[in-house]
Length: 193
Image 1: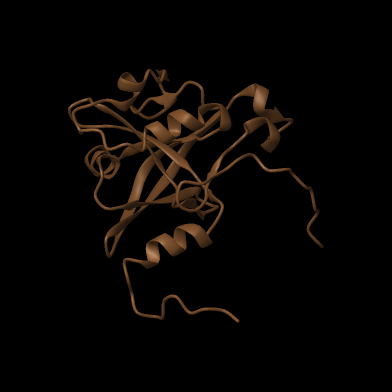
Image 2 (image 1 turned 45 degrees about the horizontal axis):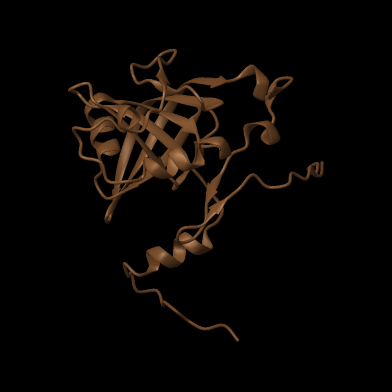
């Protein structure tokens, strides 16, 4: 028999349940720069594809954080792939740094220029999505951010022909509470025609 924990009444307590039930969640490790030129890097696990053509991704800022403020002010951001070799750094960037502190400088994370946007990308990340702000939608205590993908970069070593190789990317994900999903075993199953 299932136990009813929450009914259809909105409740801030549902956040912990959703975080543990909507899993695994890919991580957008988002780099931004403030109008004063201060870098910011933070993980956001409410992240997905919003549109295939044109390519638009979505992520949600739960609360009004530095990442959101920078995106709204500059109109640009980069989604860096969060991977197993960088798991501890990804987690470290989730700490509450003051807006005047560049997490990358503080934690020793190497950054490099992006191809088309002014925001730098993480050197160790095997792939990045350079984005221009499309739009935002206010939703209660959160803001849904939609970004036009203007450039996709993938390290040659992580490619299998024309496609990124999931096993080589070694992406991690967020689960519930303090749990992280490690790169899973991959099973290829063709779609029916």
